[in-house]
Amino acid sequence: MEILKHECGVAMVRLLKPLEYYKEKYGTYAYGLNKLYLLVEKQHNRGQEGAGIGVVKMHPVPGNEYVFRERALGKDAIQEIFDSVRSKIENADINRHGGEWVERYAPFIGEIYMGHLRYSTTGKSGISYCHPFLRRNNWRSRNLLMCGNFNMTNVDSVFRSVVECGQHPRIFSDTVVLLEQLGDALDKENHRIYRQYRDSMSGQKLSTAIEDNIDMGRVLSATAPQWDGGFVICGVTGSGDMFSLRDRHGIRPAFYYHDDEVVVVASERPVIQTVFNVARRDVKELAPGSAVIVDKAGNMRVADILGEAENQRCSFERIYFSRGSDADIYRERKKLGCNVVPAIMKSIEGDLDRSVFSFIPNTAEVAFIGMVDQLGKELDKRKERDILEAQSAGSLTPERLHSIMKRSLRVEKVAIKDIKLRTFIAEGESRNDLAAHVYDVTYGIVENHVDNLVVIDDSIVRGTTLKQSILKMLDRLHPRKIIVVSSSPQVRYPDYYGIDMSRMGEFIAFKAAVGLLKDRGMEHVLDETYQKCLAQERLLDIEITNCVKAVYAPFTQEEISRKIVETLTSDGSINADVDIIYQTLEGQHDAIPDCPGDWYFSGDYPTPGGIRLVNRAFINYYEGNIDKR
Figure (cartoon, helix red, strand yellow):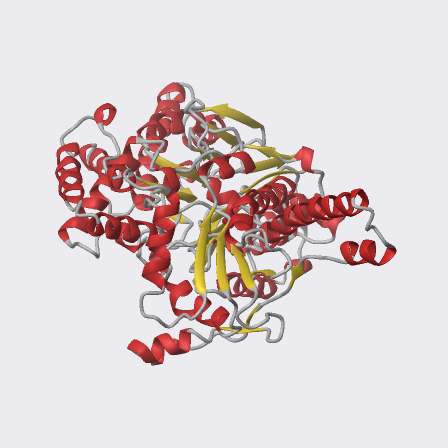
């Protein structure tokens, strides 16, 4: 019902041939830039706060720019960036010159391209927080462009380590800290090679030798083991080394493709398939803990940097964030819809004839297809049973058979997102009244006070839109019962690895559990949990546990769902009976077996940093520090 804030998206393109090659084969020197545009545009779902690109030229002339960067804010950032870049290229009139001139002087035409789509998980905004970040230096091999899809849970300790080594970061953010930490390791790698060759060469020859021998695997191995979180970190040096590193649990997604013309990295597989018109089997998933590394000479390798740990690939990535055009994700989302059908049948008391089925646009559409497929199978079983019973009783006439066979599911498009109302001009109840009209409904498809109305969505997190808009909108159709289905389980815990779900008190499931504790005179559980969370802060990483699980432990999922219904309908504005059905953890794991990361549902965080932060989130909730994450 609510739009979750999306995770970031990354894209990288490394051209392996001279620029003249792409001009002759594809008709443009801007081949790499055009591909980057498509990779970024087709991942625009992953971040709508801002975007940025970076380009590195590998054959510049001293005194001319060779690391280019363009960034913009807002939902139109991608178009703004590429319009600006294309204007600069047109002003350079590159088609009047040959390939050698383009390689040396043309702005934003190079051999390495980086793209980033941003959604802030920190609440910080502004162009200075947009990726890629750039660390400048007069030696090409010490310049570093960096972007990523990540959220670090131990940024405080990494920041301290950067300061302790003598650096002075300008901004306290995980991006800046990682940039400076990687930059320091890159400096040390430059020094290592300098010491190796300084006795046999000097000047430009020595500088070239350093560039030719940079080992980004060593740089990553010197820094990444300190990082706790979910991440895909991408970087490019000014001399042409490129890398993309994935966290050891595979929390954040990354895929790559390479042939004799290009090396490509992106957050989503089907995007690479579409943009480069390649088969699914040719696009590889980057193994957790590994990095795609391309050196200055264009040699690509996949290096194990961190080692692969327990599989904790993010299930919400499959449920919600990634584009559903991926074959596996499409199948998984259908299965999620299929797996909620037993609970739906129980809620409607098996009455398929008096039930209308729909979905809330638009991300739940694939789960809806899976739900309808399974409901169709349930209806087919009933048809078979009725036919056999009629045959056994000798009453199977052509008319009776026709009556049985014509029964079908009542599948309708109930909700239509009519306009984006500007509710910011109103306050209080006036704002809520406007919010109730964000969706329009299709009238005449529900029999008043007789039919059940079943709608499916992919998640119910905070319940705000459900209360202020969805339930009121559905109630205008006067159903006997409204059944709202979430194809994902109850979101009970904050996520610290990328999704904007960070404040404990915002979750409708948490509010319901707290309400149940108070209803049953069990407030002492909250007090005890607070004291345990405080005690956890003094423990070592191997000793800490998620104490917040105790808030949910006394109750079943169904009890919490019923309390959610009570919370959402307590003002008496809904006339129909209401039921809320959530996917079970078992149903989710069955549908998405290869991406078992479910800490926001189960509380089973994959890293110590996540456990520390969830305990801290409860402390903030208990103490009333609502602005702290």
